Length: 394
Image 1 (tube, helix red, strand yellow):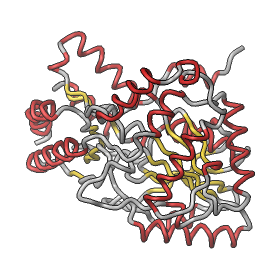
Image 2: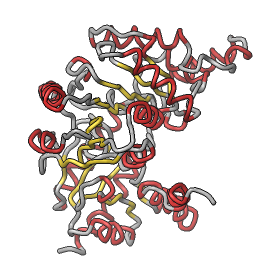
Image 3: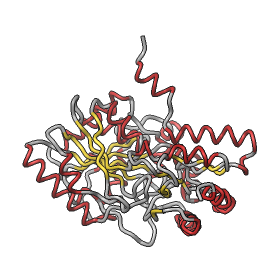
Image 4: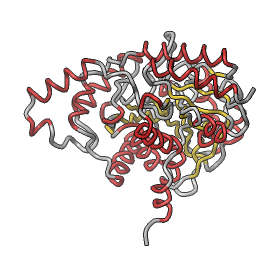
């Protein structure tokens, strides 16, 4: 006998991955230039030149045994110290490098964090729309996902709905700002208000509620907008960070978990993080990538390319009659489908080789996600297809 649940997860990929694989098949059949793939958040902008230069320097001038050997299970001490110093300087906070755990990207950070804090029967709140894999990560940790909608249209936090959802079983709430799939940024005042709400609920219920902030897009923002540093506003915070998007390194899988030093029993929580990493086999994140990111902490891929793509796509789709939520960050556009069934809308889009992601698995039916982290020319060539798609509904 094998695990039926794991077998089903293996047989049925996420909707994003299903469309991504379909894209590869169609490109092989009719040519990549004829397929407009907006399915997956795979950065089209090259990593900063410093990343390449640092890697070359490390490979050329570092003892290969040391460079490619094991680090400590929780990550190299020097790397963690560099990250802690950078965060402390950027946000004017105190950060303990001994409360940082290096991971294989944000997926590992989330999985390890959830396994560290969750017990059977616990609930974890996700604000819809949310990254679909949250459900998989939460359920694998033995908890259940409780979906709470955001405010209609703005996709900002609905505090009445959050308050109503919190109960004795609530172990954590996951937030994601800038958000995937909407690109919405939660204002700092709302993060502070969320912290107040969680403290009040902890006191009311006599429980511990963790705030998990999923931050792969923290540095991808437009117009000089500010992304709040969540631990400033709530002590029981776990930061799950990834360099995949900011440094355009999605295939390299490198990130970290940060336990707020202000968290009650922070050392014990960190020990649970280390234990969960050990039990899951997420120890010693790739050493070359650890040493690389430690020297590129203030670098970011060229966000201006995404800004140009955002402007072109938003302006063009609005003129065609699409209902668009303009993103503040990340590189996703959340668009109202032209019919109630987003899956049917996406199937119709395939007639024009437009590959869009239906929003149902994001917990918010009736929309599609467009990942505009593609070459600008791809968007220009896709615009007639978007027009033809809309015409079929007129």
